[in-house]
Length: 180
Image (cartoon, rainbow, N blue to C red; front, side, top):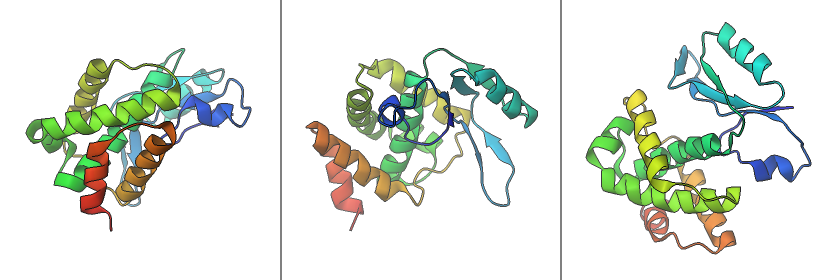
């Protein structure tokens, strides 16, 4: 089994009794009528990591084989959720978000990391994660922020927080201002 999906964490495959899957934290995108845009190498872990790396390499994409992909999945989720949720508030690109709205990034990232850490059932080093987030933002600074899924992602993050008993006042404030 090979898993690749946004907002993926181990509890999701474990709840389906999928043991030892090959998992990719995908850091490239392909949209209709465009080429492939790679942001950074995609980490891959699991028994078929070599095969996945070879297949992606055939497309000219870089990978990084690792043993434990959980932190990389959290970083990917952090990227998507911060870009989308903070993008609802200010729009623009991830580079502009990082350069001009750092306080917003830090606030949203802090609340998202609370949720991700609880879902993954492991602590995160928030400072390291936010530093890595900045590196990824600056690897493709022209990448847009709020996609069409942004409101749904924000609602889902708040639903997770509610279920986990976490306070996320800034996510709620953004939702109240930008989701009808």
